[in-house]
Length: 525
Ligand SMILES: O=C1O[C@H]([C@@H](O)CO)C(O)=C1O
Image (cartoon, rainbow, N blue to C red):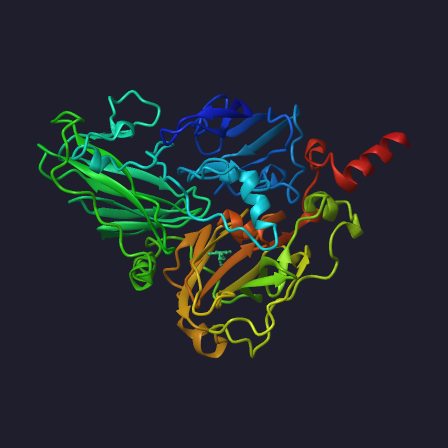
């Protein structure tokens, strides 16, 4: 079945956190419309850019785009940014069941309203690209289903009703979306972290959660008091409504892994045996301490695949190390991978590789390892880096191991969490470890029997994460830190495989750069 949608992307006024802002919306909605489809359906989404003065694209996060790499929605990688006034058709097959989110993938457009800043994505972009850099800071509000309350805790509201912005009748644009449940049932809550920066922890007071699915793959069920969700990750949890049905309970979402003063986002779990307005007796769950990394690791390491999930090939054909460093170019701050900071070319790679337009990007592939004597625990001895846009090219069906290696930042004794997201594939997470990955020591300890399949995995401070995937999807795919400012500062790499197998890339994906010139020449001859 083909399902047709028409998406108009435009800036609109909204009041997502009780203050009015300009946000990027679709068909006047923020967050955008929900798409419902079944596995095997073809989605045909006609996206019209009504932004007037900037391009746009949409990435369908978690959809592998098997056979349609031009529909992945990554500007300068899988397609040209769609110009103002133009319409692009995202036509692709729904390859799997699950709940996925979509978002902008051009410049810092994803920051145009997910966790919420009161500065525009453009202002953030200029700040990050300035010398000295102006860091974006922490978000002003966190939103649950597009709703938050700036400068007001719902929990305080009921105690201190004098704050006018905290009084809700329920119909307000920023009033929390209440989760209504019946007692003694089991609910599946589908969670995604679409944040630009924040790592999140979600909890419901007095209730445990059973994690059953991650990034579209079932996992071995495990029970927790709260769940960590890094940017780009999605989960399903089961909630048993087995608590006192004469009460309501807080659901909280707070920030972990970065020191943040952003208040928790709250909403109410409302047992339908009482009114939604019944004030919970229990306080909202306390978000774990931001720097309790051991707790986060413990949570993450509990994620193993459900019995029967396809397991990784026993060996890999290729091993690539990716060292993540915060670096400098002059007085500009960048993130670099093996000392290359990614800057995207003007001709999308997919067209450039397919049509052999050779000088549109660096022909030398980027390094596959970093110097053995690099001390990941210290500030870099030589922090200066270079920009680049070379590609890691794989044989079709090559089995690739990637070791993501974290390190100290420019500041002493600091190393942050980075959630890495791969386009076009799932990967198996083979393991996490402390310090520098030593193949002789660590390779033996990797999990090859219950490795979870994911499309996003974190590296913890000063640690490594080992991934394995099969390069079986012809196309050009981004692999990058899902923290929007970090990607903007160069924290990503480009993978390509089997591009010669792709029959025809729709022209509308390539009407820019050298591919546009090529089409023009073809027409003239
Ligand atoms: O890239 C980053 O820059 C800041 C900080 O290092 C400089 O202000 C930060 O926390 C990042 O993750």
